[in-house]
Length: 282
Image (cartoon, rainbow, N blue to C red; front, top):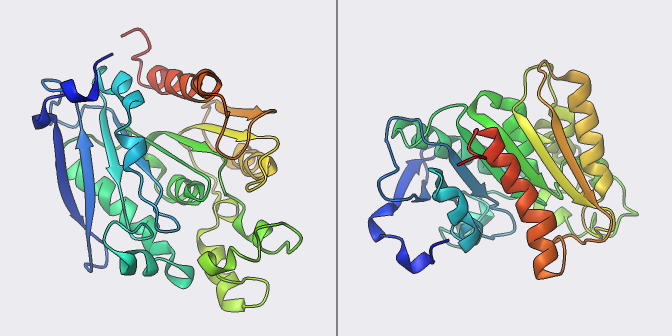
């Protein structure tokens, strides 16, 4: 595997996508192996995103592990939409509570830009995120399934209302600062219901799905993914298998050992992605 320093700088590029409401430019950073970008839409594209709590996602898009995919022709993309702090603190504040859906629509605008510029095409994208980023994955697969070849979600927060309405869970009260207080506010309840992945499941074909979670996760219960996946199974109109992994000895961040993290978390997910695009023999 090459060191990150060996990658030619010409294979790294930043582009901007205009948000759906026209108010912001969304930064998109792309990395690919020199000589392997075709610019005809045929390149597989792996997009990492988060944009929750003001956090950015570049570390996941451009870490050393991504090179194993880039060497096989993938375009690795990092997107920081409203909800992150890539555009300053106000960029984050503009996608909280009753404005949270800006995060999801910004992501769609980013995908449209990648497709318009022919870095990839509809149905040739795999998205990865986890924890609160799971709500974005869930919204996107429910509403724009044709965009994605696959969706990877780890420890996904995908049953938002069910969790927020249960005041006995340890994080429900403090999370009201991010999403609103559906137990006491009808407006917050109705707004979250519009984007809650669990309640947004439709009778339609879905992309191929890879979910992972941890039995002892103290932040996002493993049962959230199980509930969500079971509902998708009951409604989906396709024959795609759904992969669900549950680690019995991991936490919210996955396996604590460096080697266990690679063996149990990274390798299975990357193997699934490579098989998805028929590049597992490359």
